[in-house]
Image 1: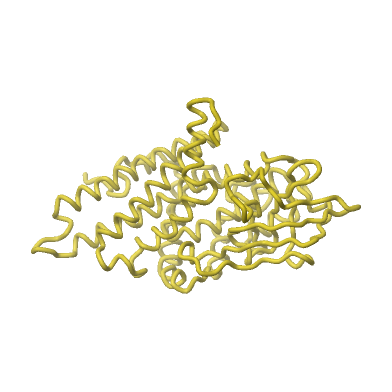
Image 2: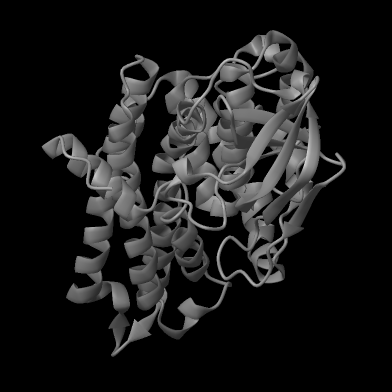
Length: 387
């Protein structure tokens, strides 16, 4: 039997029936709804908001949260497969789902009151309320402890001042999960769109994640009621816990981008004739594509074990760092190599490689740069913090 060129170790056979059904459903959505429009959306710098209703209808928003809040209650491996198949379409689509699910719905579930959960989560799962996550600030995203945004108590309210930068979904959002310094440590607040003094400004002129909304958030004496403070966490463990959830999804997503690039270049090199033979018949092309398949296979096995650890409650943040570092580097290298194998055709968005390569410049940077994750592993190995 011939091996599946996109799954050389038959990792799919290790999935449960439900996990395979989830993957197949999202793969169909990506093939039928995302791929036909995503190149134009990227060219136009437009997030395809028309997809949100279908994304919500498939249960992809907050998919790992309990069904009592209108969510699908899927396991961690299923969530990873969702991220993988969505990013096979485009990193911007996966980013939208990651932010909504892991950075906005998760903190309300994990750190919010039951009243807050019931108020927000069902509408967020249905795509009726969109969220964004305000942690990164203009002066440096890799050092969240150096946060300048501040909230002070004033009677029954909190008064919020400061700014956040590089915020996915910012101008789409109905609510923002904002982290701020207080006299009692870092705390989280749900800031609603339209609150006086709260402004979102979309960031333009991007060459990456063009089919995604990226914004700056500004808070000028924004009055937030105590009822909108997340009561069950204080300190950096709150936002860092959210980032661990989101980074987990990101470990899966780039596999989708890399697979899309390899699939495209296999077809192209099989048809492209140079010097009287297909490009795929040359040793140099086969060695390059074999290397891509090797790295994709290793990444697939890495994230499946990570997902099983997460489902068993045994996953550690450093393991997520290792997987994000490995898989983002794998995908961006493959996208660049595929762009090269496509020749001149590879510079247009009629082919996927350049779009994925540009998007992955953001994915390898956000939620912990490659260097940050390398230092996390270095600390695990040596016991010495080199940050």
